[in-house]
Image (cartoon, rainbow, N blue to C red; front, side, top):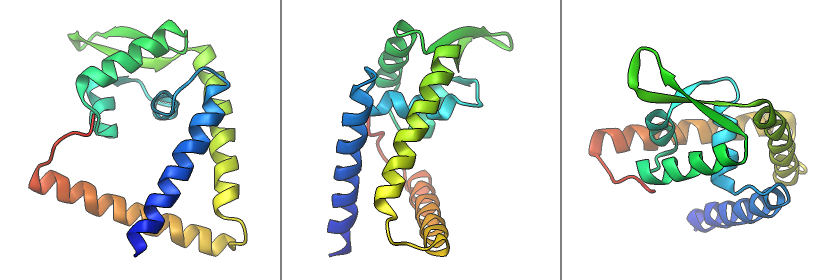
Length: 145
């Protein structure tokens, strides 16, 4: 029965995030990439691995973000065959907006929770994430693309 609750939360979150990001011409995956790139300069491969998304989907999404002027790619001086992705100034502005959207979603989710309950839930979710990522690494698994 608890699986239904997780599914409900995830569907509602995706719907909320999608509708909020649409105003800015973004899709949820683009928002996730922008959040990952806030303080990082990563390769496309690293982004794909972190998000568990196949190379072609990451490449298309990065291309779209580059077309929107939110990211740029530069050649990695240590590996000239690899391009590193980072946010532009416009990407940093988009990041702020995306954070506000997720903060509003958190406010919806955690209405009536104490700070301690919020922290506990975050720690539980973090541990569950670590468990499933560890399981996938140990047992293999297909990328979600």
